[in-house]
Structure formats: structure tokens, C-alpha cells
Amino acid sequence: MKKIILLAAVLGFAAALSAKAADAKENYDNLCAKCHGAEGKGDTKMGTKLGCKDFTDAKVQADIKDDAATKAISEGLKSDDGKTLMKPFDTLTADEVKALVAYVHGLKK
Image (tube, rainbow, N blue to C red; front, side, top):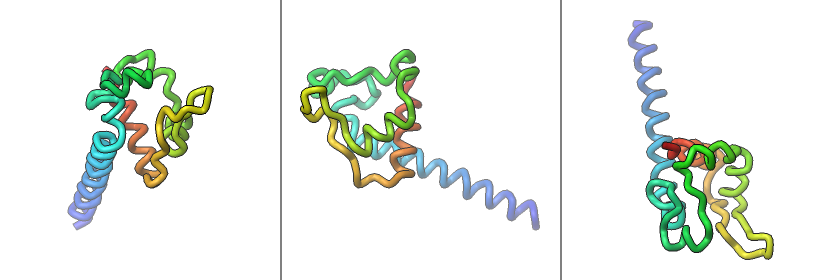
């Protein structure tokens, strides 16, 4: 009986992780891909215009710190002259932002 309960708990945990990953991909596709591209290369028309970085590049990934990425997603980004580069996605929960940051890190090739 204990084995069945443990197995059910493990499967439930795996399902929850899978759901978070799916939610992060969905959020990325809906909120980020327009500029950053489906693969994270930043090679869209808007991404090129705004100078989006290539998230598939290991050097770029090394410079992405979780706290800075979290702040950028939650608060947005502005250029030095105050121009909006990325609007804030303040409707996302803290867990959704955390999952999105992890998803972005997973774009590294």
C-alpha cells in the first residue's frame, strides 16, 4: 500500500512539473516569441529592431541572471533614454515568472 501511495505522489509531482513546463512554454509563445522568436534567437522583425539577444547563445545565457530576468519580465525594460524596450508582464504570478526564466535558460543550445 505504501508503494502505491508513493508511486501516486511521484506521478502527481511529475505531472505538476510537466504542467509548469507546458505553462512556461505557452507563456513564452504568447508573450515573448513575437520579439524573441520561437527558438529564442531574437531574429524576428521586432526583435531585430529592439536588439533582442540570442537566448540560444551560451555566452548570452551566461550573462542572464535569474534575478535580473525576473525583474525584466515583471517590470519591463527601458533604454537609457526611457524608450520602452519590453513591456512588463505584471499579470504573471511569481511561479509563472520563475518557470518562464527557467524556460528561457532551457533555450541554450
